[in-house]
Length: 613
Image (tube, rainbow, N blue to C red; front, side):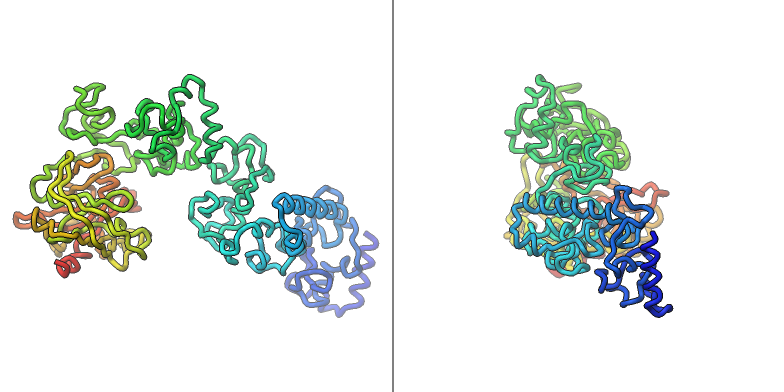
């Protein structure tokens, strides 16, 4: 302490009194004068107290927190409790261990010696903060070249095109979770924009470097942990989870031998898609017994909460939730709707009031395909398919108008619903023909009046156009959702053969009716759970209309109904007043329609259809 005092005294005498600590960063225990190895944030002679020891080339243990096993000097990324140069022993050991770890890891990655040299040292004030700040390795540029070695170690294993200098520009960067798809993340960040969170996975380093490793709890965000550990740094605790073949094999190995034999293998073409398709375990009928083991494992064991989105208050299992979790791995969140898991109304006699499943019925329908008739039409709140407390759908007679003009649109991936609005023109939703709003994904075929294996006719699709203002991003109510519509062109005049429907643009009277008590309409489309059979709603309501040409409705629709028409009887003729868009959270919990469905009304597309006819 005496030496520290004498040094400070002589420095005080040697410098003008007013200048000694006039820097904005003075008296923070970090020497910021460049001449003494600082970052240069202070001019010479303006950070005197913080640079006192370094100015005399002194490093000692004069700090009151010296020799406590922790480096407390700022220059070595310590706590800052000690002025630079006054925690020599603790920081010396820390630096030695850190540099040893750095070299060991670099050599383990087979890093060339010249690359190790280029990485340099950790003299930058932002070194060892988990973020590469050396622009030479795709970092932020906050550190001089060769002064942020440990943080930039993994960056040199990534192709330059991936890092691109973007570093951590993603809005989800630095949250502990790797969000880049190239490393198994959710794709919420572009390649190279979540570098700090992805550094372990980018370097293919699954280890136990997190301070919370080996505590018996998985703390990595990618596996639904609390996020205390960066993805890839709690390997042992998280070893049993994930979607890799190795992780699934480990999980299956824990299944009792007898049950494991029943689960079988993954030879079904639909295996490893997250949905159990083996009816033996309550799955769908798409796989033979014993051919969808990985997807059915959790259901076979009675369910668990191993999904990373488990216990978030939202059901994420296929069919009854968002599809983000494998069947049976989000049981707590899905408890209220679990009885509908993997059930459909694909039987051709669904909605006729008679249960025709083998269990409890006459057996003319396959198991789990006559849900409304066998389990009733009441539906719990929170079901991903929004039935407003009750499923009121029915199978329509597609030999009759207006239903015969409605058809299934076969997309490049999946299906939507469309309606003939001209001789060779079909109206549908924009998101059926584009993913981003920039490209056009032309559908393949249109099949009109498809039900029970027969149709009224079909045609090939030759082109598609959509509202140029369409964006896949959902806006608040009335904030710009009225662009989700598109027109599809057919290769022949199918509409002339079987008929097509006109558009009725909503009038002032119609809008007034919606505001008062709602406008009664009919709707029909190809819900995912009714297969190739068209299901419809009669007398459901449009409950709110917005100035952006979007509406909210309470018609029972599901995935596959996108693009389906809402029909209003105008002077004895059925006309289109809207097309179905998406599920929508209205945000108003004080109304019965806090969870409603969104559609785009005819004010948005009436003129465009008229021009094309």
